[in-house]
Image 1 (cartoon, rainbow over the protein chains, first blue to last red):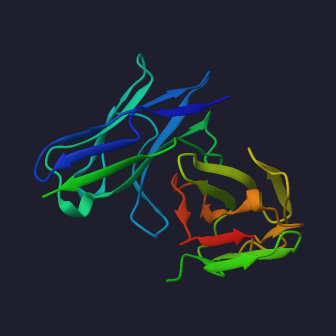
Image 2: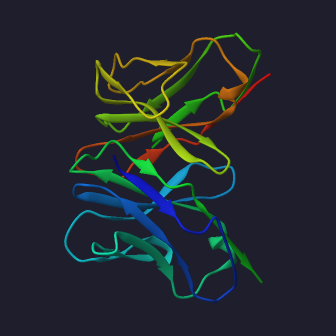
Image 3: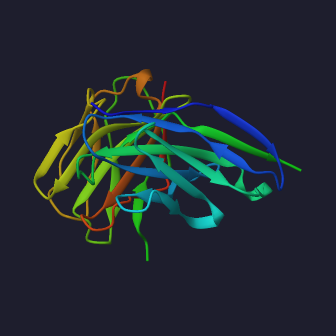
Length: 114
Length: 112
């Protein structure tokens, strides 16, 4: 069975600093990987996804993530964060070509301070 | 351009009551899912559907029923509410080409 571990439950940073949110997954088969963002009192919005091909994936709002198969990781990065990036971020995985059954990590709360 | 619509947005139930959380999507998506979100637990899959008439259990199905009589609608039924079902519930949909769920805005349920 697949599983997702988000290594940090909270990440505080200052505005304009770089940030990395870490995600590791466990699966015995090939996977698709996703990052979602949840702003306060809202639903989840897809930031980016890795299906195949280039291991560096670019998403919305200046975020990018790198798939590392040997380390089973899919870390999310942004070179310079804004106050408006304050939100909870979820890493998710689906197995073996399945598009519909996602397993989510427990989330990382990113707080951007002025 | 509604996307995924969930009703109600808020609900308070007494222990033992039943209710249905409604979910509708207007994107003709084949796949629909229900998740619950609890603090520090992320999102956990309750039930999912890969098409009209086809449903299956997720990680935490106990106490919930679903049906999918049309492509658009995927209601979640709480049979006999318990305080452990206090949570925020999200419905989501996608199709076989999109590879990324569209989420509703959620239903915040409190069971007292």
